[in-house]
Image (cartoon, rainbow, N blue to C red; front, side, top):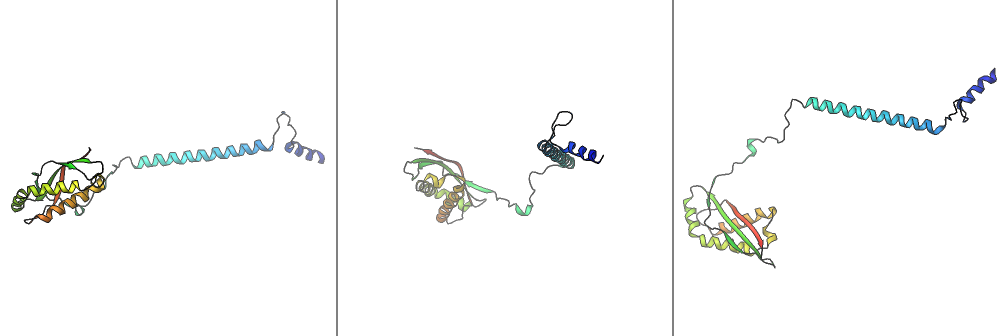
Length: 184
């Protein structure tokens, strides 16, 4: 009887085929365990993601999404309304490039409203202003004049040159109605 007890244990754990003819080995048991844990982990991930999505949608259901942060009025600087001098007209010429490029610009000079003395001086110096604009653009290359990074610098340098000759006041801004560079 004692031998029967040990014989039963040998049959269960042996590598011999079982009564049904199927062999139970080490690899299929490990594979089954790995697949079981992979299934449990995938199920847990799907469950957690579903709960998070449902919770976030539920919490955001009544709120309006904010795409822009409102700014305080302290940070907004109101641009002054300027009077514009546009009698310089459209200026055309060639840049200083090796292969010449034609520039076409139409500048407008902004100055304080009601400054009649400066307006009179701008009218009187119209020919000088045309010369300053033509000289400025013809002495620079296209790479120095084009692009958003150069736009502010061009305006500041041109404004500084124009303000240097004015006696009755200063211009505050320059805006270009046209600002084009065409290959020759």
